Length: 305
Image 1 (cartoon, rainbow, N blue to C red):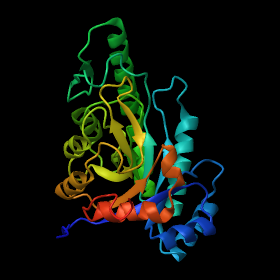
Image 2: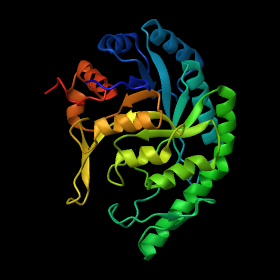
Image 3: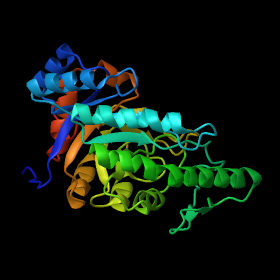
Image 4: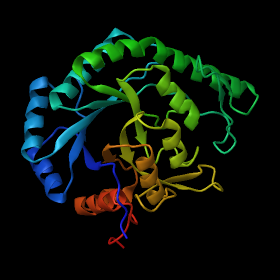
């Protein structure tokens, strides 16, 4: 018997510059929206408005855009903030509700994710320990804290622009080696106490640090603004601890994840993002079927194998 969910999920695809041909194909395959990477200074507001019209004519929404704003670069300055302002203006012209932002990057900690023991100050977000005591560990802790302070310093200015444009900022933890526990990442988001800041959570990026459902529950209701659909095959016996694989072929328990999204009352878009070769050969219809299965709480590969 099929499950009944109160929450509603919507499928999306990543695009660059919007073209009518691509949007028509996505609409025909059953997608609900797109996420655009075209937010740079070479994208004008007029182009963004035209792209919005193309999508809306086909029943799709440009629900979000991708941005990158590494606050902890030594040369970070006004030019970076201005570029991000433009990106948020473009997002508003697209009609997007959110803009993904990767807030920084540091080198990987000198300890396996299996052995990480994150201890941090919940008030200041200062990282105290990672479960190792060495010069390399201390250097990582310093770099993490420098990155945190850089975001704390500059994010309020970004959020002012976000509020003015009506576009919420979604911080994504990718392979940037920052805030590497569910509790630490959640505390970082909540530190800013702003309705204009939340998480763009990737369902595959964090598997080697903790199971996906642990991250979702730590972030909790109202903190996750958008989701990326991705899978990771966890192999603790390997040095890399695994690799990205096509959705449904990894370690994620997709039925459980769907139940947890219901538990935390997540409503919104889920955008497929893949880094593994096989996924790129699959048809739009196959990806759309995976979405349909996932949203219904069924075997994500049902009808595909």
